[in-house]
Amino acid sequence: MKKFAIEFKWGIIFTVVSLLWIVFERLLGWHSSHIDKHAVYTNFFALPAILVFVFALLDKRKHFYNNKMTWMQGFIAGLVVSIFVAVLSPMAQFITIEWITPDFFTNAREYVISVGKMSAEQAAEYFNLTNYMMQSAFGAILMGAITSAIVALFVRKK
Image 1 (cartoon, helix red, strand yellow):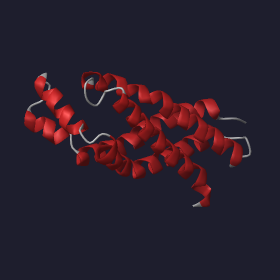
Image 2 (cartoon, rainbow, N blue to C red; image 1 turned 180 degrees about the vertical axis):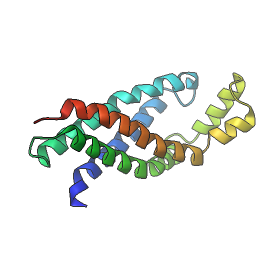
Image 3 (tube, rainbow, N blue to C red; image 1 turned 90 degrees about the vertical axis):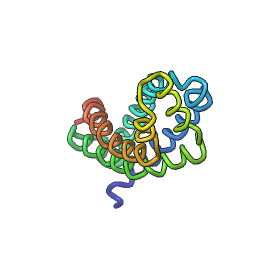
Image 4 (cartoon, rainbow, N blue to C red; image 1 turned 120 degrees about the vertical axis):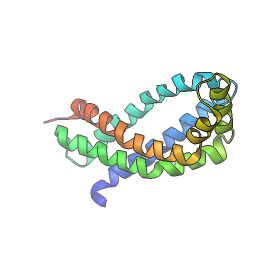
């Protein structure tokens, strides 16, 4: 497990950053009065997410690989970070819905129904804790793999 201590640390950091982003979204009203903007603006989380992966792989390169790292080593390190994020993501979703923004699902359902994007049944099926926990876990692995592949290109060093 010591082999993956750096990745575990950055998985926790990523989770904390994502929770701080949720607080930011809530403060800006993207979960309530401006929920119509949420689907677009939430994508800006990609910027801090990529930065976390850059710092994670730089940390791994410097403190584990003696400042030398191949693309494959960086990619694998990023995948491991992604797996830790995926494991932590259901807990983060629970914290989000229970404590940070408990009205999000209600607001989101009401919005998509009111603009005709979903029926009440579709909205209830989509906007719920179980579905969001699954989406966040699978999304962490998928987006983490893509991000890791790209970031590893830039942080590799002979």
